[in-house]
Length: 171
Image (cartoon, rainbow, N blue to C red; front, side, top):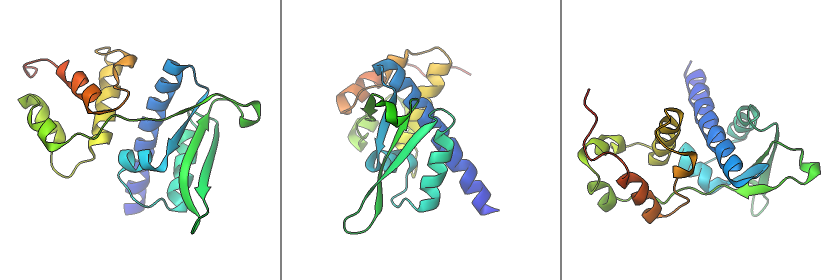
């Protein structure tokens, strides 16, 4: 039973990442995107990529990117290093961009955010996954532009967060 729960959670993470990648490809005019192990570790919140997890990613990314290839480093042992996703067959030499995320939020930065935003960064959570989910949610609601995602670094993230309303929404 637990494996089904893990698989369903993984599928949701992969779909969210896939949707974000589609938006990035559209914004930059890319046919596909390369996601490094380091970026995936941040988004998914795991350190080791077992063969089954890489297989799940390939299966789930297929919904948006029908062409995929996983890359492996062979020194000292074979280990997953990145995945390339494309709408075009790789034989056609698609334009592949590099997936880049925003900077890591730090404790000092978070304490300066307005009160309504702090519960978003509760203890023991994956900040990057939450920020990605929030970005996609606001995008779907039409509250932000696809270009609103910061290209990287603390300053761009802080700029995006300053655009939030000064007062929390009334319920």
